[in-house]
Amino acid sequence: MATSASIPHAHGAFEHLSAQLSGTQPCFGTQGDKVELLTTPTEFHDRLLEMVKRARRRVLISTLYIGTEEASLVSALGSRARSSSNGVVSA
Image (cartoon, rainbow, N blue to C red; front, top):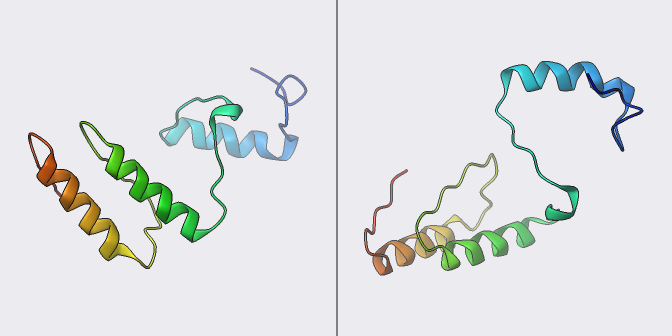
């Protein structure tokens, strides 16, 4: 098992929590330089709309936060569904 000394930016206080969560929760690996932090609700909302508009095959949104402007998101999803070949939207 890796120790906090061998994992950059790891902190010993989180090792136990990390081990518990990784055994029970889904996770995926990525590189830190591939992650972009969105720091405001507006930034999140704008990025979500941008990604819906660029989608080619599928839009899957799994989030605890959708924002206060959900009408624009619903509209973007509807537009994307109408313009795609299989045009399916489910909630």
